[in-house]
Length: 268
View 1 (cartoon, rainbow, N blue to C red):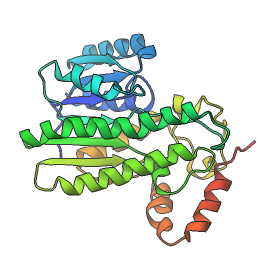
View 2: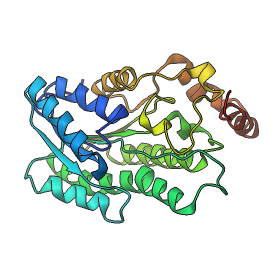
View 3: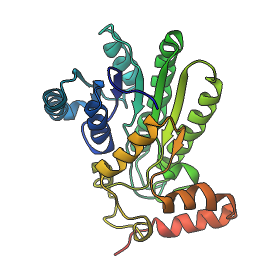
View 4: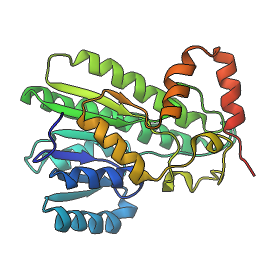
């Protein structure tokens, strides 16, 4: 088990959804938190940070930084680093999504998704890992998705960024063997967060009839327990695990893509 109490944890996208729920889990077990959020959520993240400090007696700091900016990840890293405190755990959680076909979604929006979902994850890992390796301990938890395991038609760029994060995480974790540092992924299915309430995302997908739409608190608690158990990869829900970790190995690629395109269409 990885001990949490007394650790300093950096969580991006901590103002809502899974990031907010995960920050509550870490605070509950005595971690001090560096909470990242978009500048538009500055008031919200400050209120949440104060609530966590008051409830659990932990220290919190807030960092309203836009990770879609070219130097956003570097700005966040240097602001946290300026505190003179170690980052024992990095939780890459911030994410964006847009629903529609590739040729219809504005190019600049899709570039923004890539910068937040993929480039920011990579940059923060690259910036923080050397410090962890020097100390001989540390963890990175990349909040990925079941979308990492097959193409996601109608939000293709989102799925592609998660596939990037998945491959990167597994490769880097292998590179870190023997250093005391590990990289893990948490791969929930669609979760009832603000991420799925904008950008033209349908209220219902055919996939929900199978997977449901879990609360971020329920999903985060499962992911947090898996993180503490030092699992390098975790899909919550046995049915999601079977479909994405087992069935995908036996279904022909062309069929998997066809099924994806069908179940990710809007459901009336």
